[in-house]
Structure formats: structure tokens, C-alpha cells
Image (tube, rainbow, N blue to C red; front, side):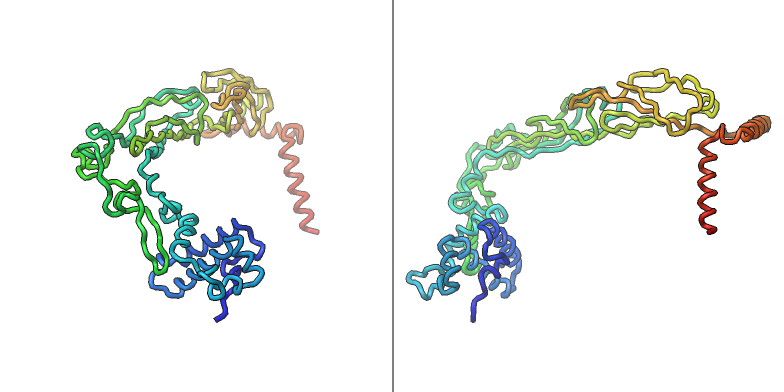
Length: 382
């Protein structure tokens, strides 16, 4: 049977780079690997062809011979000593370790398991902290309770009563085991010792051989002024304990600022809605406006319209990353009177009649809008 073109097998072009070939091999081999297709003979055969194609195209000399002579240039039956044929278990171990070591837990070839017994850093943790807007803007100090793991005091983190460990019988102390998949030999992390090469033979009674115990810690967290939702504060070494004497991970305090009843925040600026009466909007006046640091006086000019923004400089937020203090923007909303008495209704009717006598003089926006509406309907009639 005629062999399929190796470039087509890996689904790459003939001028593909080494990196592209390796990436294509990783994707296809993962898809057709026997472990993922148990009992599927077609997938197993496809995997063998993919492996053979990669063995040729990943080698500079073999690829050159293949490009020049095709399959004849790499056919083992035409070369002494096996030539460039399908790789044996040793070749596959090297390739598989390089490409899949990080996926299947292999050690990347030779002696990788020993590294597992070295000191490793503990896992990081996250704590969600809710703050009021006032606390976030001014800064504060608060206490939090965190459940984490610490090295067992009884066995000092070893997990053993005597402080010693025995060699793992599953991997004979190598930290890795080999699994035979047909003609291929796959190297994986030892499931018994998790790659350490050693196991606890006399478990500590306190931690039951884990080397760690759970502990609830109360920590003091300083919140800098100006933090906002999404900011993180790192507490070094306050998370999970490391393995084999490794350092503890870090605790990240994730800030979330609660919604405020009056203000909304956008970076350094604050915004608020400011309802005012019809009379104040028409005649003008002076209002007390709240800020995060106290009340301030704001002069509202006569004939103020809904939607007008008043800017109070320096009444916003100084951001935690520096920069100028933001401003407070107050948006006017003219409030329509409600629950009117008969006398008040009569007064408004008289006022409305008096205002209409002035035409566009008193309500320029209304008359402009009505004019636009009339023009729109006139065009529709044409």
C-alpha cells in the first residue's frame, strides 16, 4: 500500500517551520492517542502514522532526504541498520517526553522525576473583600479570617513521625513510571509518590502523613486610599504552605466596592444626581451639596435646565496609582411638583397662560421641538 505524504499526515505545508511541525504533531497526536481512543484500531493506526511522520520531519537530515527522494529516502528496507524507519521505543520516549511531558506528566526525557522531590512553592489564595465607597476612597485597615494550610508542627512538615521517608516501591525512587502502549513506551509521573520518589512509611498522627494542617488565621490588611473594584492587595507568604520546605504562596485580597446610595465612581471622578425644585431652577438659588468630605455650597443660576452638569473641582478621588485628585460632577434634575392643592393648580395655570403669551421667549426648546415635529408631518403628507 502506498504511504501517505508525511506533510499531509501532519496537515502542514512543505515549507513549514520546525515549530509549526511540532505544534501540528502535538494537536494530532493528542487527538488520536490510544489512551483517548481505547479500542479504536483506526485511531491507533493513525497515531502510528502521525508518529512516523513527525520522526522524519522533525529531524533535519531525515527531512532533507525525504524532501529529495520521498519515502524511498527514508524507507528502512533500503538502508542498513534500520535507517530512518519508524522509531522504536527509545526514539519515541525522547519525542514523547519533549512534546507531551507537560500534558501527561512525563519528565521531559531522562531523570525528570527527581525534580519533584525538590522544594516547591505553596499555592496562592484569593480573598474577596467588600468595602464601602468611603473606605475605598479614604483608605482603611481591616481584619480578615482566612482558612489555609500550614506546615505540621509535630512532624515539621515531613509527614513522618521519625522525619524520614522510604523509597517508593512503585517507581523504585525514580518518581516516574513507564507504561507500555503497544509499541510505544510512555513515561508518567508515579501515582504513588506523585513524582517525589519517596513515601511516608510512618505517618504523623497529627497530619496523617500529609505534612500540613489546616489553620484559620486572622490577618490585618491595610487598604491604601483610592482603591477601586478589581484592585488586588498581595500579602506575601500568607497562603498555602509549600512542599519539602518550600515557601508559602501569597494571599491576594480582591477588592469590591459596594454600590453607593448617592455617588457613582468613574476612575478619579465622582457623579451624583441633584434634584432641584421648579422654582429654584427658574429663579436660581444656593444649595448644600454632599461630598465624601462634608457639605459644600453650590450656587445654581437662574434658568437652569435639566441635565446641566456642575463641576466641583478636587472633590473626587485621588487614585491609588497616583495622579491629580478627581472632581465631583452634579447633574441637575428639575423636579415636577406633585400633590398640588387647588390653589396651587390655579396659580400654575395662570403662570402657564402668562408664559404662553410670550411665545418662544420663555420656552425656546419647546417651540423648537414643536416646529421640528410639524415639519416632519408636513413632509409625510407630500
